[in-house]
Image (cartoon, rainbow, N blue to C red; front, side):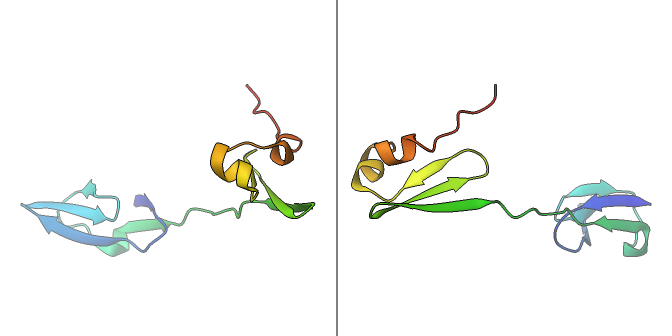
Length: 92
């Protein structure tokens, strides 16, 4: 059994005498059929996003530690006093 990890269903194609499983372009033995392929779908986890209102601006905190603000200072410099108070430094 050939295992394929892809979010879309696999398909077989033959190019220049070689057989491949797409979309991964994994080479498989000649004569392979879709019945011989085990399709494993990846598990997607939705990101956690927290939105806070600070005065008239909106701070967005992402699960990877990024912080954004919609104030003109953050738009121009990519940092501001609003986002700095919610910034979480990455674990090293």
